[in-house]
Image 1 (spheres, chains in turn orange, blue):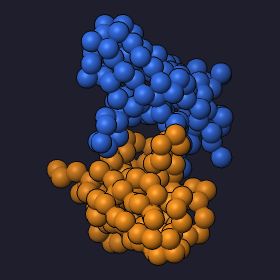
Image 2 (cartoon, chains in turn green, blue):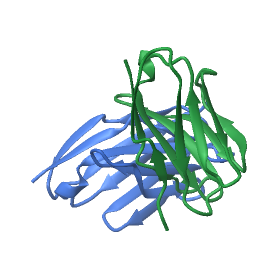
Image 3 (cartoon, one colour):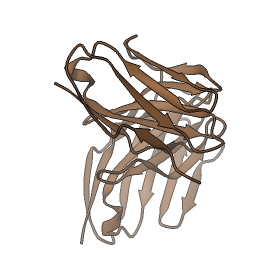
Length: 112
Length: 112
């Protein structure tokens, strides 16, 4: 089976812009979660989608949003980018709940 | 929400020695505790996990112990090898979907 894929792998944006990141889960996985990884902060949970519905949400501002399509692919959007949004954004897919998460390679976002 | 603390943040051991990483969690409802290994520039990968109805789990050189009363769990790596060098993350999940709270990571260096 193909693993979790994310596009693009690298992004450079300027403050105030918006960005959309994409995640394709492992075939058959209906749960997709998004995390922000920064040095010293570890992985911080953004949100989880399951069957096109947001099932869980972390403590991030409303500028961070996401959605999931009927084929389980997911996108996350960050509007009005801030310097502090520079991070590695990881998505992970799972089969069922409370099970192993399979991570994608991440999208490295740099905000200038 | 759940809060996971992880110690130490860095750990250096001689090849062949054991390494122990400890995590504490705050929410007694947490019932699933995975450990992920992230090598430099790569995605996190699950190495072992434990559920709240089990006190200990072992997989070759890796073991995890869970103390529900004290709300802490630990990763034990025996007979360490240079390829064990990586960042290790603990996580906890309450079980409503796939919302994981991660520790801030331990950078393990195994010195040959």
